[in-house]
Image (cartoon, rainbow, N blue to C red):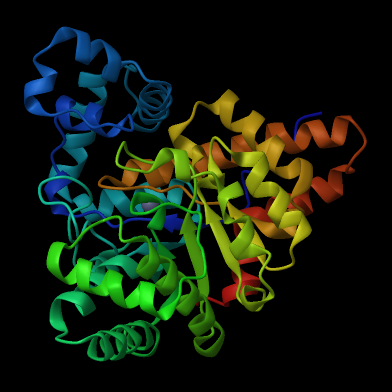
Length: 389
Ligand SMILES: [Zn+2]
C-alpha cells in the first residue's frame, strides 16, 4: 500500500525571499547553498572542499529533482545550464512554473537579515518587492532581533529603548501585516530563557548599547518573554529557531529541551509557539512539547529538504510519534533560490507518504486518517491557525 499525497496543496510555514541576483546560477553558487556552511570562492579552489560540498545528500536530491523537471541528465553543469536557459527568458515565470509544479499555495516569509554580522549571514531583502513578484500567496513573519537592535541603536535611554521596541513590534502587525514573530535567540544567547530582573535587563541594555554584543543574555530573554506576551494582544504567533543552523548557531544551547522553563510557564500558554526546523536533530525533544502542551507546534522546515530523504522520514516519524498531526506544520526554509522551496514541497509530500505509511501498516492510523494527517500538516493547520488569505 502506497499513500499518494501529490494532489494536496502546500503552505510553506517557514521560508525566506529570493531576488534577481540568483537569476543566473553558477555551479559554485549552487554548491555553496547545498550545505550548512556555504562555500567561498577561495574555499572552492581546494579540491578537498569541493569534494565535501558537491556531494551532499541535499545537493544530490535537489539536482535529481531538477533534472527530472528540466528534462536533462543529473549532472550539475547540465542541470544549471538548462535552468539558466529558462531563467534568462523570464526568471519570475520560471518561479511560477516551479510553484505550480509543486502545488505551493502560499509562503510565510521571514523578513529577517543578519543585524550583528557584516559580510556573513542573511542579506537584507526588500520584502514588499518580493511580495509583489512572489509566485504564490505570501505572509510576512517579523524577525525580532533586527527590531531589537534598531531600538537599541536609536535610543538614548532605557525607557526610550522600551518604547521604540514596543512600537516596532506593534507596527510589524498593524502596519506591515506580519502574522508571526520569529526569534533567532538560538544564534545569540541560546534557548535557555530565564526570567531576568529589571536591573539585569537595564545593565544588558548598557552593554548592548556600547558593544552590540550577540550574547547579552538577560535583555534577550526579556524581549522573548515580552514579545510572547504581546502576541496575545496582537493576534500573532511566536516562532523560535530550534536546533541546527549555520555554524553561528549556539549549538550547545539550541536544543529545545532548554526551553523547558519558559514553555512550562503558564504566562506563555496563551500564545501559539512554533519550534522551527523540527528542533533538528533534537526532534523528539521538540515533539514532546507539542504533545504535553496545548500551545506548542513543530515546524518541519530545514530538516526538509536539508537532511536526506531517508533521514527526514526517520525524524518526521520521531516527531509524529508524539506530536499530534494537528500540531505539525510543513516548512522548507527555502532561501536565496526558489528551487529549495520547490524541492522542499516535493520532498515534504514524499517524506509524509513514507512516514505516515508506516503508521498505517502498523495499525496506528487507517488510510483515511493518514490522508487527514497529511492534509493537516501540509496546509490545513496553517489555514486554521492563521486564516492567512
Ligand atoms: Zn529560516
